[in-house]
Length: 367
Image (cartoon, rainbow, N blue to C red; front, side, top):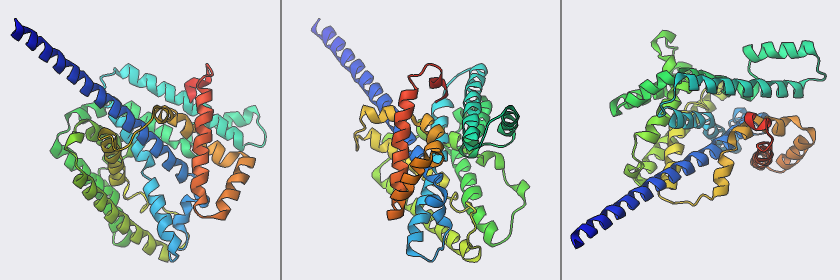
């Protein structure tokens, strides 16, 4: 009788331990996804500072400050890839119907239409029906500045059922092949073609390295098929050493390119490290959350859920409100680091605004 009771106790303890481990894994996942969203949107805001911050990477490369500027601009280009990796991690593993995928498309299109009108209206001196008709045509043919991401996201959602077939069946060797092709086309070839000879376009599988294909697949594999418990500090160190070497190579290429093309704003070399930088950021944040190397409060997780709205509204705050722009410029003129204060202020103001707008019945659906 005692043995039977002991077995029940052991089984119950095992069940509780299993539930605790599952809860820990779910909490860890929520933490690293929300933390990555916050990091990614800060990167995106910086990318849109233009000549106030981001475009300093295209200035005179012979100054000492240029090294820092090109490093920051190159690192922040990984913001959008991280967002696509998060989308792949969240959506590719699901078994939603095609109908639900297109329901998501409809929702994003409504958001795109609304915010396009808002931004075109912010730029217009006056508004009339003829102008609105022109805006609607432009929404289809040409995205407004940062809203290009919504077009790419809609395309991702349209192909999601197919990406699920690919993602769920990728094995380790096939993932290595994807990475090899990705690095070849995004890092090696841009350097080779710029400084030697171009390669005929039909030799390149461009569809695979499209941001809304490559990064969702990589994000799903890294998040779902790589056991974070198998990742050590040594692995992370090796990844970041590789990343640092790629930064140095891309920086040298940008320096040499600007030497003979002063003022050129081509972002080719700034984007060349995106794949490795995005993966390293994803794995590192997930590792830190899983190992409890940092404690993320619930408030931070809440902010992570506001990131989509922050992305939508940040251009208004960063560029379109005159008195805010004047204050930002005052901050930035005192130091080259002032731009980071502006980015943080935009992020915080946007977070407060979106948290309030999410309580408005109709508006909450488009932020």
